[in-house]
Length: 274
Length: 261
Image (cartoon, rainbow over all chains, first blue to last red; front, side, top):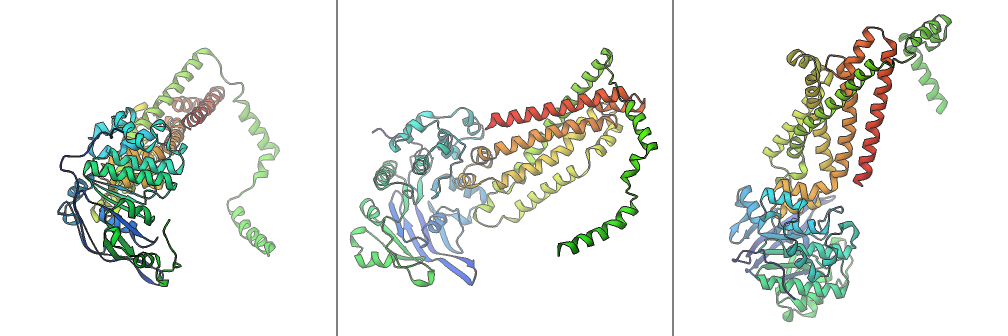
């Protein structure tokens, strides 16, 4: 299987450095802590999975790491630069080097798949090329090559609203393969996929990331998939770091504790493993 | 209970009606009926001599031209204003509250659009006729200015009410604002934007007939002349042509909307 056209700079893999991250939201009856004193240091090209029950703060952590959400306190360094100290232009420059895939694929329903996938390359296209790609898709070969491993190359000219939920999620992930990014932050990329497809897609994402040398952060609630495909797992429980180690060294008790959420969060204690 | 509200309503309405001398039954008195009949008789039959019809056709064509040019001019104003004023393309509000300077700029642009559309195009036309003289130029400029403000405001609101998830994700991944607009917001908002623009073009046609009465050319100016000369038949012909014009614009906009689906 030939890999998609590479759009990544030679100095691949951005490093991520989060320290003492805290985030809280005001709600009826006081403030709710979403994240508390979370530290996370990821080396360039490393691949980690963030696991935890729903509501544990995985999405917020990914968004803070991508500079799409500002933490109440703590520092964020991407590629060694302190992100929030940069001027707005500098921040947009750093944002160009990352790819954040939200849980709901950001695909406008009436757009065609080819345009939706090429939109991920916009940060590296100039103004006029970006505009002309609306009418004449700039790099059809790259789009086909990106959709092929996901099994969607035949749907390239279909409208997004003709795709099923799982297909839309796969198109959203195919965008990663054309984006000029050096770090991928994927929020629940397997949420709409059945177990077989989910495993294939995860394996594909990990191998592509390794081939290009980009840093990979994936949030998952499927514990076994995380254990099988990642060599470093970060567990979040009620906004705090529960563990940050390799899958073999995590005991069964730690796993149960991860999904056994304290009652004051309003969630029943449940085993979240898919 | 409802009877009490009804009685109260009538009690309030009665003095209002007598103060405004609201007496529609006076129209049915024999004297008024006679006067109405004589007035309406002046309109029939509609004038159909060929020289006059050619004049009307030219006037109608000029009206459409004024309306279309005015709308295009308005687009040149409205599109940049709407893109800059819309909060959906704000980068600082991606991560929380909008920063103060971008907020002030956006509010300023909103104020400019309010100023443009508050002055009715009739007033603009009256002023512009004194500056650029009688003729279509004043009409085009008047429509361009007022409709620029109107289109800008509604475009900005359509952009803000469209689902901005795709646009915000593009901005968060480092794309430019215009790219986030064309690839993220436009696919969603295109239908609504087009439908409103075509509706406004139809309004511009009606507007330019009204502006003709203050000297801005087109069918309106012809109608103004005919009314002043008390030529009822000519006014009737022009009214029929005007209704046909607006009906045609309505049909065109319905067809465009079907094609866009």
